[in-house]
Image 1 (cartoon, rainbow, N blue to C red):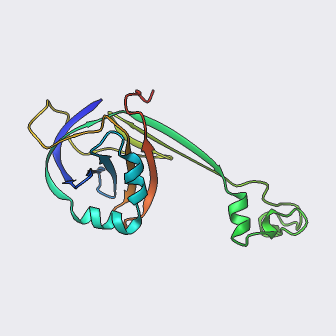
Image 2 (image 1 turned 90 degrees about the horizontal axis):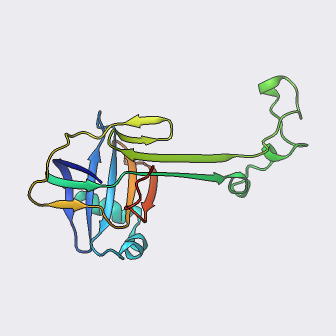
Image 3 (image 1 turned 30 degrees about the horizontal axis):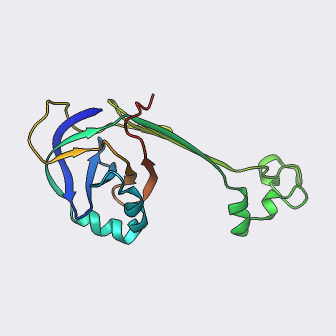
Length: 182
């Protein structure tokens, strides 16, 4: 478990706490939604929507917070072929209809065989690594201090967002924060 005391944007809401960890450069940040009850993840996820998230983020207030955060690492991989076809991108996947002549000068030679999306997030003492970019959490490691204490020792949701637009780049859940993430 990593420990850090710093001024962070934080809110203690009715059924969960929310913490915003800025990255160096302040272009991105990690937002952690921690249910107050150890079995509260399902209810939190049921209430998670873009509109609710915007409202929750408006309640954030910058203050000294002692943060206990586990190291974690996760990867995901999805095939997007069927999704793209359902959106109307059909010919590009057909070896008889695809036309990528602008790429190699010949028609009907190339087609899309598969579209695979792979993402990973690695949170450790050095910061967060997501996809191929590395960001570092601002703040210094320190000894424990008074409340509020944000202790992510049970399941939680995390998001990585681009701060200017609020676009969510990654979203995930940590269901067993006692694992080391190694």
